Image (cartoon, rainbow, N blue to C red; front, side):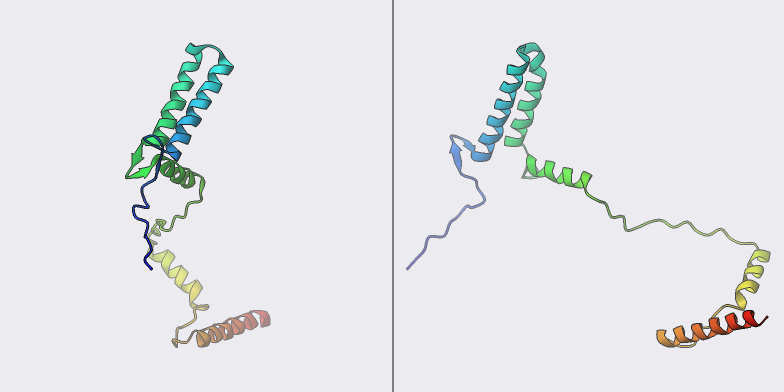
Length: 144
């Protein structure tokens, strides 16, 4: 038995004359909102500016495409971008200021007694070595 496979599934069906269902809903919603504004204001000259703006947005949502994507997808992506969190991975670090020879020699004297030499590649051995060194330094200071 053979089955008919649907083709052209990316193309939306034209339901209301030359309009798809989404296009019709956008245009009908814009028209309804424009009529509601006119009914509330009761003056065409005052209501004309918001009516034109609403009809332009609804026509854009219905027909305008950016990079072959509907305008509603672009608006949704922009909204998510501006309201979502941002992750900055690269951050510039300031270079340390060059030290004078006297300050460097003083730093070497201060850290010479605490520095732990690297004697192996094993992290566990390094950790135990550094703990032993710090323990001996701490006990020496207590005895004084």
